[in-house]
Length: 306
Image (tube, rainbow, N blue to C red; front, side, top):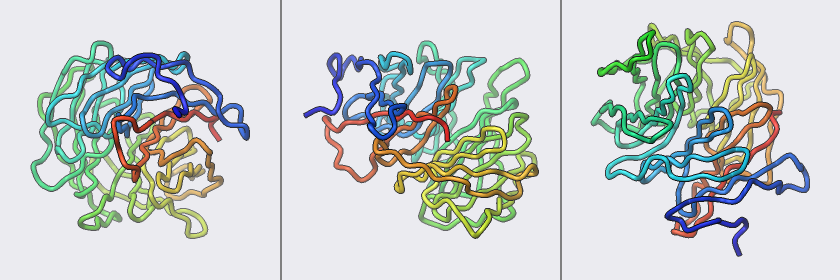
């Protein structure tokens, strides 16, 4: 039996309203996603969410308020969608292309293709992206680099990208996913990223590429860290296969921090990335490890920010 209903056929992808689902926490809500969609990344602007499909590159867009949605960006041959970020001012979506080695930019209103960047043809996994005042930064989970797409003060995208080699404390382990989720301070002068395989956190100087470990108290770490979100001096890290959200209080200089809570939810099923809207956080359940069929169910879990 379906755990939630789909309003129309999978080709239309319209869904019913969000509903409270957790007896333990009545503030928990779910938003159904299309069956078989295989989501990973999410970005939110106002009450509109955007979720990418890993194997097809499609982007599904919907309302946090009503739960209704539709495909904004159709599946395209040879594309994938992992991390997703939005530049709300310019109404552009930035999408990390995983193993394709590419980054894509779409119009957030129409879904039209705006730009395509071929970052690398080597072994790679372009995993996540954050947009700052001067451009978009993409992580490469297999290599010690970031890719930067500059944005001019007037909002114009550069036709060229830059590759920033990373040095300092980060040590990349070959053959596994390393740097994953990425965020930035409001002024964009410091980037923060999580290394999934070690559970370590780093600041990154976007000018030099120097990485510095954020030392967590009591020898803590955040293994399986995936999406991250910086809110003031609180850093939230989703530990995907552990189904836990770690909240970390950071020192003013970002050199250290302390894990102050870990939050689970019965509606988490390998949440990969998340974004905020008001006092709520919304998590995409990637459900890594399940056998995927056209009928495999996917959903977003919304909880109050710890």
